[in-house]
Length: 192
Image 1: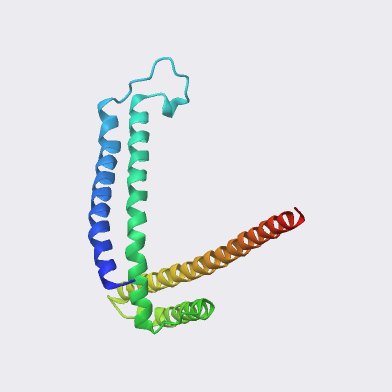
Image 2: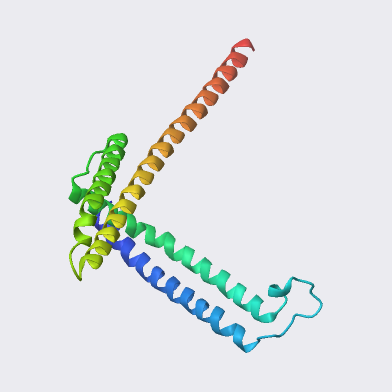
């Protein structure tokens, strides 16, 4: 992605993320506080099981569903930043290959190396008095972050490969069908 397009995407997506997260937080507050105002009021004429027959449960459930919708909208924009940060992280590791299978293999290698390093360093860090537990936690969370970034990149690579293969197959099928129609049309024209 070019720098100019990244800047424009950041300018467009960052406010949307903030707005969606703020609105989701407001609906979370509503889901927690709103039911307190109508606690114990049963909805007349509706025969629902006990947790769903009160106004407080309906308000809480509705606010939670709306909150989830806004969080999903925020996550869709956050994925853009995940893509950009993944690219930056992978470039710092030296992963620049355009061939997807080689890139996925290198990601798997980095995952295995990360797991081996964490497994080897964890007992050493744990034995350090007073701060060993904290260092071990930092190491574990760092390894988890690296692991998730690399898994995400592998998923992206596989998605790109499958999208490209599917597009090529669809092009081939449509070209084949169009070719048959053209032949059939020429044969009908020649027979007349």
